[in-house]
Image (cartoon, rainbow, N blue to C red; front, side):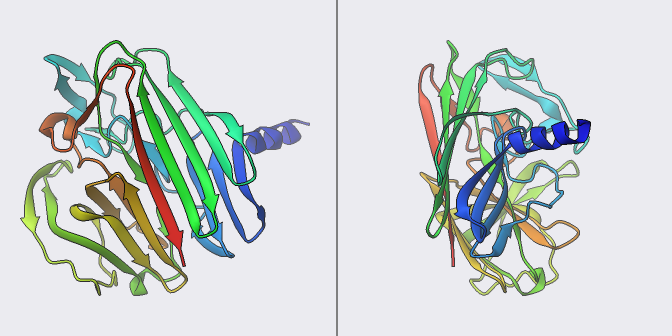
Length: 287
């Protein structure tokens, strides 16, 4: 009986879009509304069995790291929590482990909500997050609406952390329009930018990445032996974090509105005024 109850609870945490076994998406309500899997035409785009930290997490109120978990906003200093992944800096925001509720759902779309109603020590602001996933004929769209429920303005950057599967990373290509990469110090905090040349024929090969690039356009293309994927950010995401895990079965392509440590550097940092809403969309198109 206990096993059956556990299985039911696990099913209750997953929302599935699509009515065909060959094309569907699964969203995990208890992991910040993360896209747990994406299958398109029997091709595994995001593997539900992946076991990476922050897999497909939505990153808010900050993407990547905050140096030594400390920052100042409007002349007030705050201290965030560190984690097992990084015990020096704060990393990847505050909603990746929150439970979202279903507001509306049909066969191809679902709208989820999370309300921050208690003031967090390191980020004592109130806000609402709406996530809308829509399974399309050529891929998937994710819309993220952030509403400031507080009486004061709130700082933020945001990002998305999907790992895209490939049967052969060695023969996969990452195509993007960039000419600058961030250099980081020993605790992975950006210190400066360097000029680079990124070719449209840049094969990943045996190279390893854990790098942030400044983009000149809002589109990135991944070509694998199995499929081709175009990731578009609207209105924009000027920065892209690229990470290759050790098992080399996937690549993390992480669009961000700011690089790491924006709460301190101010690079890309944005502010939402009281009662205002910021909307970000990501579109995955698959061939």
